[in-house]
Length: 151
Length: 138
Image (cartoon, rainbow over the protein chains, first blue to last red):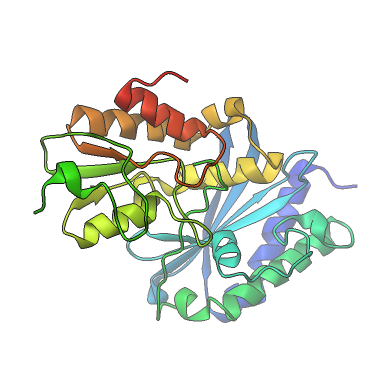
């Protein structure tokens, strides 16, 4: 059984070996913990590729009892515009019907490390297919912020 | 520029302004219950049509909301599934929405309220805007 800080370190270690990040030479810039009242602490990991004018920001949280751990990913361009991978997937109808939320670790089989590997592979796959031209700096797209019906 | 007092009443999206607070600074802000998405028309569609007609439009969406506030909101939804009004009041977006509503009122924007074109349940964000701008009570 691994504890909270070990899980954060494990996730960071696995992410830094991501095939996509390595292949496209996104360098690790650093990490920080985001803390806000009413929500779990989030580990923010930043990777950048100055040649491509792109930054990838991964947010990992152990989440709540209900959600379990989850990942959020944003692509940020040289103007500071951000593109949420989750909003892109939702907006582009890329979610398979009936499939559990692909950004939750508990949607995957296995222990924490196996789940982490699978979610990183899922993100790698989206980045290297649907979003490749955007992530490597050839293109950009604006995706509407998903208000989830609250506004 | 067409006369603002009547021009907002109807647009090709068939959304009509329900009320207008006239302003003086030449800018127009749009509020309403639905922001609009691929399934329904809303504030964004109405605002886009006015923008095409030459108005200087502002809505509370997109780049007006800092990245970290959007991220905070997504994290809360992810963790809780559904946010209560009390949960929403803790979000950074709610705080920033409140500042924006006060700003457009204080800076004398013309404010167009499209109401609730899709007959949706009450929204804490929209109620907040109506309260600040028009003095509505719940």
